[in-house]
Image (cartoon, rainbow, N blue to C red):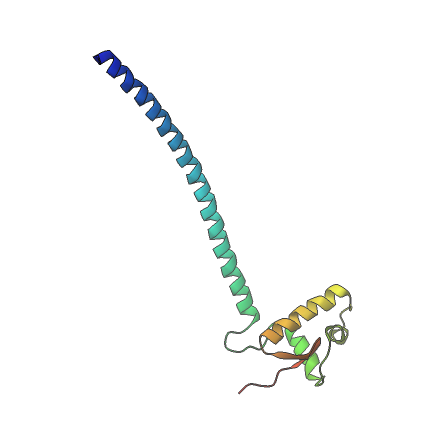
Length: 135
């Protein structure tokens, strides 16, 4: 092989390698942008989780499972006067809330949360009563 042929081979190889390096730089730029977007989304999710935990901490006290917000206190007041228990629709009526399906379901969701917090019991399906005091 003569020197010009070797130099031509090196020039070809250099051009091919330069193109490969350019493609890799483009991929790095694209991946860097995707990574930045993903990191922003992760930060947003962390903020959302923190905010939701703060909101629910205000709704439920940490050391007492009693419900602190107004609507939950109203439900507790109604159930205190009904020792045999009540259905969600009956609680809506007792609170003076229109017993439309959306209000009944909203009330039922609150009642279920209170059952999960051991403030209420649901011994019979759909019948909610105050939970016995724990000592």
